[in-house]
Length: 198
Image (spheres, rainbow, N blue to C red):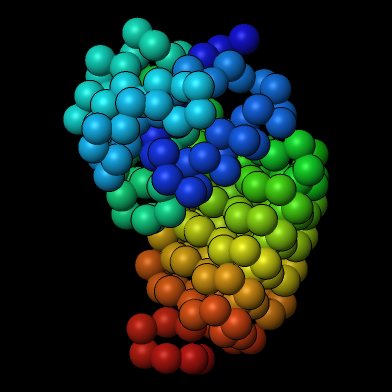
């Protein structure tokens, strides 16, 4: 069983760690975290240091996943992990439902109660949080984040780095531009670009 390093020891990092334990695919090696200076362990697992120490953590783990909600930071750290020689793990909670015909990129985290439908495509480093839904043929580009109970209807597209906050919804075929943030409960039924709705 490969040893897995979790980058991020905050709430999302601990949630991803629990998903790893539930799935039983990896052995948890420990964490790294910039925000928790002086933190030496989480539960019974070591915190090896800060993200500046990632290269030296290679001796402790074979694979890693970035469990940090900030999309731009997650992207930067995922590239740092590649450069340090880590395999990028994808974590799927045992209580998520993922179609065998969905395509899932490296470094994704799919949490409890999430549904990823047939023909859905997820890029690298995507978070699909608890209860979020990506219906059939939805496309989620690299480093996006679907918050709790966010929902993408069939054929909708979430552009690179976009964030759907809790309870936000995309209608059928809706397209959201890269790096856009949808507020909690916001619904989009048409394509959105920098000039507004078209």
